[in-house]
Length: 205
Length: 259
Image (tube, rainbow over the protein chains, first blue to last red):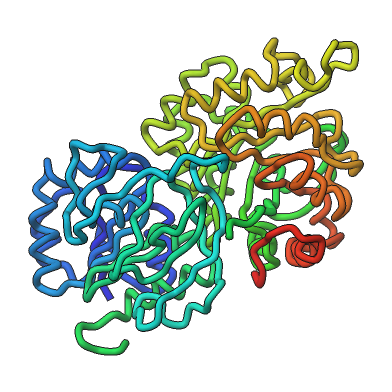
């Protein structure tokens, strides 16, 4: 299977590519070739770093190309900032809009005595019916590193708790996102990526 | 619930894992890729590879080692040693590291922290601090000094202040090694770890002195560490991260299990 991985110059892609290839995927990386997005069978938008970096998606016209691909039913997975980009935006860079596929904004963790960023392995509470997280048991751990988070809504596929409950994964039809790093989350993370690679429109698997 | 991380540390010299006491008397402890894979399989939450050769000639060996080690590693992987510029960091990221750890080069040029953070994100920058208490100081903890060159030379900075500056410049984590305790297996420096952890808002990884499970319980409690590094406790089959974590869980520490 083929996966188009979007490079928007925010951090390195090596780990994501390595994990996808380990699972047998053929990876195609693009930082602005719209034809590659138009022909994409699956799209992964990784991301570490600042939400502002997603302005590159607008500058390169990748945003409308990705929107069109999603509308065609192409399975899409956003990771970390790549998940947050699916929402209306983030208070990390208020002037920079997200895709708006999910209407809510992402916000900073609430004031507390806990350290922010939230770094480390935290457990998932998976909602029933998630196809992306099929086979992930309650309490399995994944690796997070982030200061901003998406709210828990009807589209939330899994929640996690740090300071407050937040969306660890989101899923509506062919559009999926994970706040954690599946490429760094051991066997659990590989299972989730493998579910994404197996995702078919309409099918249970 | 967020868990305390157990990080396996591999000190690497000329492409081999080594272990010494207070950075001297090195003994061979195996192949880095093999050791890293074993630690991940046995439940380590993260792997740190520190190149203690850090010579110019050793760079290519290091990059090959990182590439080989990262290939089948699906837990966070941090690499340190000899990273002097943002370009050095970029090469290490390209080879498969998720984070880099900077130490003496950041002391010499603190802007290095800003530069790597800007390009790769704060989560990718770990500032490693080699700390030594000054027994004659009025407050041995607050006055603990940063050392460089494998703990031989004072850098002229107080540990707590340098940790704060590192955070301000965009470090994502602090890796604090007590040079007094390193390799001694007598326990972490919990007082110093707590002083640093309470002074910064980013995670602190405690290092130096692990010998028993109690030492880890102590550093996660009294020492307020977010993660702890262990090297000698894992080598030579002394223990595994999994068995360590099982014992920690029994002692009430939240850890990633099963793993």
